[in-house]
Image 1: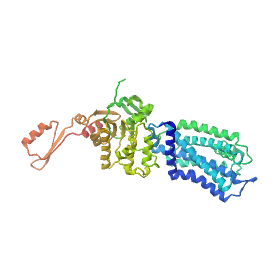
Image 2: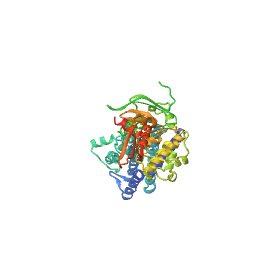
Image 3: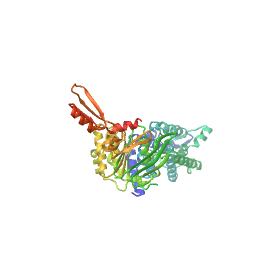
Image 4: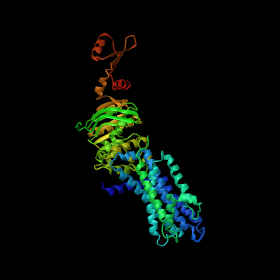
Amino acid sequence: MSGPRLLWHQLGLEQRAFWRNPETAFFTFALPVGLLLIFGFTSANDKVPGRPELKGLTLFVPGIIAFGIIVAAYGTLAATIAMLRADGVLKRIRATPLPPGMYLAGQLTSVLVTSLVVAVTTITLGRLVFGIAPRSGGVPALLGSLALGIVCFAALGVAVSALIPRPDAAGAITNGTYLPLALVSGTFSSGLTLPVWLDRIVSAFPIKALTDSLRAGYDPASHGPSAGSLLVLAAWAMIGIVLARRYFRWEPKR
Amino acid sequence: MTVSNSPILVQGLHKDYGDRPVLCGLDFEVARGEVFSLLGPNGAGKTTTVEILEGYRDATAGFVRVLGFDPSRHPRELRERTGVVLQECGFPSHLRVGELLDGWRAYYPTPRPLDELLDVVELRDERATLVRRLSGGQRRRLDFALALAGDPDLIFLDEPTTGFDPEARRRCWSAIENLQALGKTVLLTTHYLDEAERLADRVAILSGGTIRAVGTVRELTRLAHAPTHISYRSSCGDRVTVETTDVETTLRSLLDSVDLDELDVSAPTLEDTYLELVTQ
């Protein structure tokens, strides 16, 4: 089989396995979409503190897109790899002629597809149900931030999978890293004010960078993502890729 | 280096885990079309040996060739021609049996037809069943089917029947005999003597990281110089047992002198040799 056909074949297998598994499908798809609907219906008319002209939902929708990408590309990917490694599926794959790089490419392409499904669903529901659309001229910023965010968090997901000793620890490790950061990054709230020192720390992490970059595609007062945010995402993407290449394992530690 | 056409050639194989030596200089060769069994107690180094041949571990020292390739370099051509049944190994559990097998078949240049694979492992009725709904025995058979998906020339079976009930073992054995009939080369590790006795053309007894003996089951049986036991019920009603290494002479002289009620002659078995070599 040629490279592109083999990749397509792998993508088909991964996508089928992903959507059939109720745990991954729920946490990755239903959770962000459910949060959007609940918050959207209960706080539809709230304004952003200090900006009476701006609906809170305008900043909440891109926050949910960020959350969706983080769950799909980071949390679910890390837990899935940890599970496949502990079960010996990765070891089994190593015995076949499928090139290891092609197997990983299949996994990552599948994560890309899943992340895009979640993001496009969120954007569409925001538009159709709540009338929240990207600002005029904001779509390129939105797409660019999406792409960079998916690459960054998928790389970190592969890297973190190496830290997960047993699959039952996966939830604790992934949720324990991204949830507190998402809360202090203002991913779920638009008017968060932090002490300067804490804001500086949080701004060095990719969750705030992704949230802010995606918001730049929605906030009518924005002219695009800040160079600082994009730099932070790119730097974490590089760190993730280096660590993933260094620490990725096909077999559990003995 | 020796030039050899044997599917498996192992010379002076050493493997240490940290400071602990597990393999201390193995030499063996497996011929084309042969079922070769590595027999030994748990912890003897069977799985380590097989995993070096499969490319999962690197040897500390020694020369290893599998179908002419160095397995530690993971050549794709080698993986296209070998099938592997690992010990306790999971599946992508949200795929159906047919999907998974088709998924695997796509990796090989000349895969076996899906229907044929399902027939060989008797999973035809489970084709549309999710892998996670299979029973333990069915999963082990699926293991086997995945190893055969690429129609390999050489198959590694690492303790394929551990945990099987007697009927499932017999079925697995006939599947292995089927491979033998097709002219495939099989490396089988087991700690069951009867399994090696029934299936293997040749057996290597592995213990404490070295090969204690290699040969056909007949050759190994003779190796122990274990006596044949002749027992019978004497005219007084007691059970009498005579040990001999010359069965014919002993039997003739017994027949001439006493009545042999409930005669039982038990020749030495592979077990005698095995126990002698392994408990040394």
